[in-house]
Image (cartoon, rainbow, N blue to C red; front, side):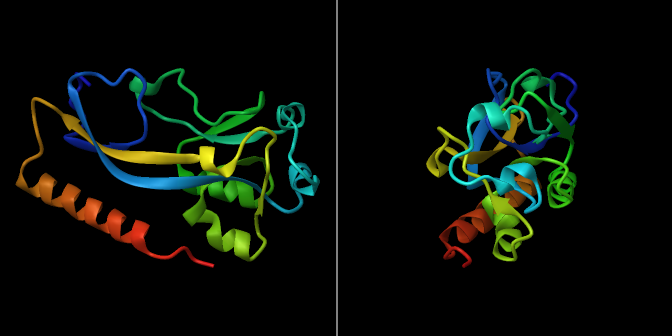
Length: 168
């Protein structure tokens, strides 16, 4: 945080959040574990045991921040490919090169059109696969008027999205 690379940020849970950062809730999201229909995990029926998941490549979103170094969430496989953005992860999943968790709203169309298949991992229920996004800024340097407007607008858009009925 000492590098002052940015004024505001958006992120998920950060372990050992520095006191110098202020965190405000922005949006909630639901995650689903998915794979392409031809992927070996997609061929299985019923909950998939941990030892089976362990052997398949999981596509994992990497975080570039030093704040989250060595911190992993939702990593269930011993074999991982790490990517730096959700778009790349999505493309690799669609290509059948691995499996992984994606925000449900991002893959809803793919699930409906059967380009991706929802996986059921043993011991993991849908309720435990949610997350929270936060706005972040340095406590000593709160956002100015333009940044506050942007954060308020983002919060309003996220609230409106959460209140919309789920797509079927």
